[in-house]
Image (cartoon, rainbow, N blue to C red; front, side, top):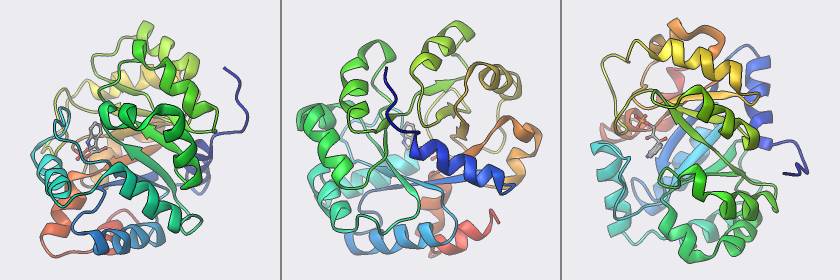
Length: 258
Ligand SMILES: O=P(O)(O)OC[C@@H](O)[C@@H](O)c1c[nH]c2ccccc12
């Protein structure tokens, strides 16, 4: 594949690492907790240290979402949040965020929108990448191509059950960063992370040139101490949503990570 420009997402993570810290990637479902406040929280995340912001596209059958994310995104779905709305609202704010913007969503709404149109409109709206948990690598060529034509990345998800051979296949096309899923199961906070993570991360670190982001079940920096430099970025969703539900704000949540 021809790489026209260096990935903005990779750059964001490298910049954070050069400043001596892990890149921070908060996740919020689009339109959560409500349409207006969502954009305020997004700006607050952007101003309080987010390097990349992952925006969830609500979907009726979110197979990889745990209870907290699922409830939040269903609420957004019921409030009428659509991919069109997300792209139109982002377009109005283009250039307003320092952080890279990634859309996380299931394949069906993207496919229905039309992959070329999606890539064009997303680029216009300032989006820099996509995460599509239910799109297997074997079926991702069309989307990867459509996105690449606009300089956008499709972020691969790898996990504890991804063997080295398969990681190498992903590595051929990996751009932006690799999302390493810390648990076998759905999103959501965990009291402890599986012990085999460190070993699998070490393999991933060897195989991939792009940065590694760890996500699923992360709520505090202390959970990361054992992984040292093998991870370059951290993703958190459920813990941020809960923090907002309990009356907190995004800036307060981000302060934990300073
Ligand atoms: O909620 P957690 O455990 O912090 O995990 C991140 C997560 O919410 C976000 O990245 C995400 C939400 N739904 C997903 C589906 C697949 C992969 C990732 C996601």
